[in-house]
Image (tube, rainbow, N blue to C red; front, side, top):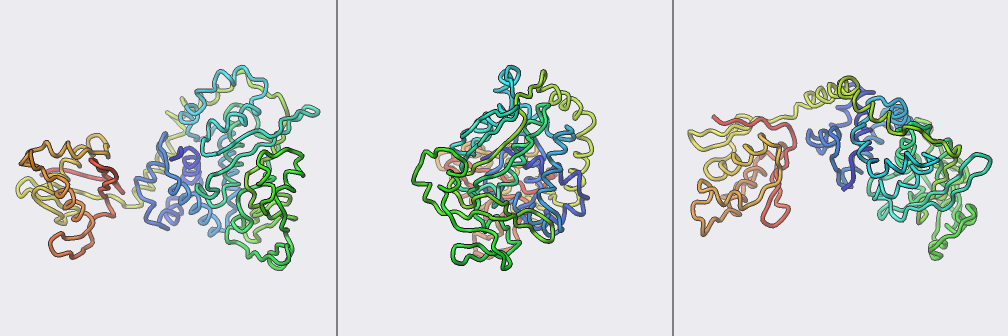
Length: 432
């Protein structure tokens, strides 16, 4: 699980730069874009699993390409909003810096410290380290390295997102962003870097795009030698890479797909960062704190309005009614279940609509005599199976399937002795 912070910045950019009608063409691409997911992106402090992170980021990139837009320009707009402190999740950002506040007030170089604490702030970056940190003629050069356990776990091509994420840090602390930041090596393969925009062919050690030589096969050791650094794992020096010998540019969107001088398919990522040294800030967190206050009254209102309009436009809600007279439940005026299964779902929905709770223990329901009449033989698990069967559209008695209601909500038996209610849209529940 990873923080939703950068995805939240993406979502804010979508809400502010595009109409609801345009965003609908993105969220209608896949049924996994539901109200719950959009709320997880909108609200602070949510966490997202890696598969969902990859799904969202990849879909946004594909959607931008389909529109003829450059994804790098999209990220540049996010960076610009952060530099202007316009509509950023300041409260969440400030919370991520809390353990390091005293360090920033005492440091001589805010931007240097921003890079040094990256391994602690972004723990999905593995074996992160500074390979070089030199100051020459008032300019600092840092070589920063990190690895992904699975390079494409969070997004197929993470290069642009990582640079965007790193560049935002200094801006949020009242200093300019880095003057130069560029990958010298990337775990992203050359083919992945093309993002299905251009065909790649390899012949006799050369790499061709549209019949033109744009790269060559080499070893990671050549990158290490070019950087003038020592590499701890000497076995990795023999890993094959592709060195881009010229920029590869998507003709339609002008996106730079491959950067000249970068080694693709490397065993680690190496980032070259150059910036003016020893820039400090007397009050590095004052803008963030002021932004928190301002957002409560001004900046967040248009975002909230856009979010509400998007959810309304998705028309993704369901009305569930429990009828006391015949002990039954209907979903959007269509009968779903009755008797004990209906009571189980009723109790669950009472709690969910009152508190938002999604995790439940079996024993809570076993204690309810209206659900389990025999405390010695509660048999709750089989009763819960009947509820799940009704939701999934499978009749326990004859095995027939119908539409079910799982597009609105589901119940997951994700662990022993407990289960999870998974709403996929706004739930409107009442009892009559």
